[in-house]
Image (cartoon, rainbow, N blue to C red):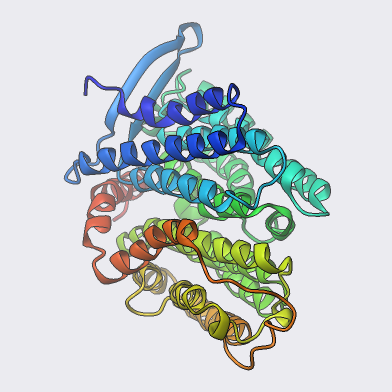
Length: 491
């Protein structure tokens, strides 16, 4: 294409952040941020509409020399593995601006600048085709998220932000070492496609696999490196939680798909049983922790650990249904869990409480709110007809084919999700109206509906007609399986 579409998508939020620096009115800052994220969303839709679902090749590619002496290039492109996540990031960017409209009262300009810069960096992660460029985006996005938690978070924000930064930085340092090793072992290039074509010795693959595992596992997060997540979610403002759950958690799983499987195929196959065990552990352990929570945000945070366990289970099932389901479930989780954090934020704005015990009978005072909450709750527990059902069904099908016992353990996690989600909804929305005596609750307004409706649309669209989404994924997943099993020498 003559128009550098991906550069526009990636750099537009950063350019918008520069524009915000010169605005004085808080209303102008909010409207400009919404306009920038809305335009970015429109460009991502243009990208999806023009996406060729019949090929696994990178599309909308751009390459320009950056540091020629080291072989570093400014290289962007998307395939079926990354296209949906570019769109998801743009969608949740607009949602986050709307969610912060009245929730952020101090330093509004600085908050919106941080949000836009983080969106640009996250989009760069999904589009980068140069490993050095990928690492720059990957590492730099920690800074705006650290600020969003540490400046605009709750009472324990400094501790939560510091813990988030330390965990993710430790993982990033191991990833950096892996990047350097790959550079020298792969012919002194940072080109991701060229590195994927290399046939590394198994000992090198094994070492790199565990270096990448720790870096990506922290981001997912996988048990036992998950303890930063509940603190970060509880202390983050609503927009921070939406982005954290909707996009940042996907980057660890995306790393497995983009680097571990195609670049380290023998090691990925060899250690797949270990990864399936860790995934099943996260599914069950996260579900049990969610079941014990009385804090709404903590419940949704621990449910994310469990649901992301399904994603890694599907990835390391290393079969077509598992991989298709894991990628689709990453998209579904971003939509559904992002929506749940939005709903927690909306009710927190009205009551300044996240305790489930403080609620009851919300259906009587906020029927629209509780109706949409029911939809997203049912989606999170993978009810047939919702988006998560399609993803979890494919993951479980692939998981059972890979390992019967661990597939059965994942089913237990699905049962736990029904228990804690239905229990939460019963206590919050149904029963006697105890909440009215303590708080003045208003139902959702027009601005909040604008944030909610697109997410509700994708819950039903993917749930009832997933074909367009699976078509985007299909060719790239099949090619990835050829890369894994072809290099490993089996089908």
